[in-house]
Amino acid sequence: MSRRTFVKGAGLAVASFYFFPRHVLGGPGFVAPSDKLNIAGIGVGGRGASVLRNMATQNIVALCDVDFGFAAKTFAEYPNAKTFKDYRVMLDKMGRDIDAVMIATPDHSHAIIALEALRRKKHLYVEKPLTYTVEEARLLTAAAKKARMITQMGNQGHSNPEGMQAVEMIRNGDIGQVSTVHAWTNRPIWPQGMPRTTQTFGMPPTLDWDLFIGPAPLRPYNPAYHPFKWRGWADYGVGALGDMGAHLLDHPNWALELGAPVSVQASCTPWGGTKEEPMVSYPLASQVTFEFAAKGNRGPVQLIWSDGGIAPARPEEMTDEEPLGDRGGGVLYLGDKGKLVHNTYGAKPRLIPVSRMQGYAPPTPTIPRIETTHEMDWVNCCKDGKRQPSSSFDYSGPLTETMLLGVIATRFPGKKLLWDAAAMKFTNLPEANQYLGRQYRVGFGLS
Image (cartoon, helix red, strand yellow):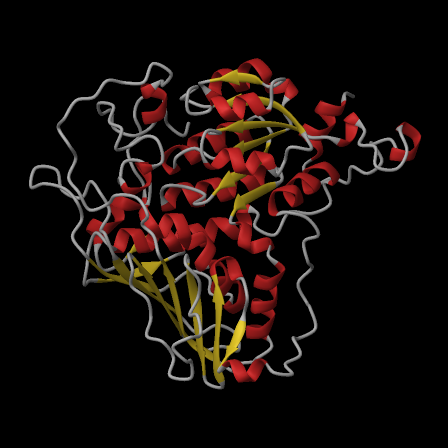
């Protein structure tokens, strides 16, 4: 059995017997070829470049991007990797040489690529948000479980030891029963809230526009979509909540074991669009309230998401000089025995008032700490097959569903949508259910 065949089929099996000990092959610090994972990166011109750098100790064997010009710098970093524009061609030609796949394409193509990789028994790392629709999140979570491959979503704060401490402080009862949580972000930091332009543009010669569009409706090329600014358009991204919800809703979801909400309601500035084509670009600012039922020993929880410059009122216990979160946002927990705030990615958890931190002894750790990066933890899990990483699709799939319910709610501002998670439908507003899934362009479906 070859190394690649073994790693592909290992799933959750223990793999430690397969690799030669390092001391046999080259002494301390030597990394044997058999100790490296063969990784293919898909969507490597933007965010994917940073993700790959955190995996660069491995064998980066293939790189795929629809725009060779945009991805040229990343290609140069891995001169031995073969390059492709179409992920399907890459998987067909190099399938046997690939153990694991990293996906960092625009949101609308995450699921179709990830499902194809799972069918071919590849371990998966998918940047946040995991999927573009609720149906895709449910389907991808189930498919990953059935395939028994190692999976991870790219919400890096989930591996942050400070974020883990924040979770432990909440669970330890340091602020008592939590009834309300505020999460906010400075996003969007790209254009939103505008109609689609009718102007025509020349297309970069390095770009395959048909592959960029993928499952979305076919439209003319526009630099307002690519690169980077696609996130504000409903065809390709899921706005500010899709960008930062995986980071800022993560720790409250984790600490309070929120599960699925029972309702979601939004208020927002107008969507960008026209009478003929409404809702093409996400609102400039929104506030979304999720309600979660009582569970176990905790009571009901209200989680309030804010973006576009909206932030919660500063607690009266804080001075004007004390930071409430950081530049990217933050999370504020209100309990019956106190308050706690932390920055983006779970960083710097602290009790309010800050005087409570004087002489404070954090609770005994109960969450295993990640000894490396979020990305390398996934790599190590792929290689040893002993466990799933902390943000596997079993965890991140349901978290993504919650985020995407909030996105749907912005289409119906002021209306409370009642959610039945088991039936996967809104029970009081049937017209909202159409946004749980989507139509796929021919040639780019899930089957």
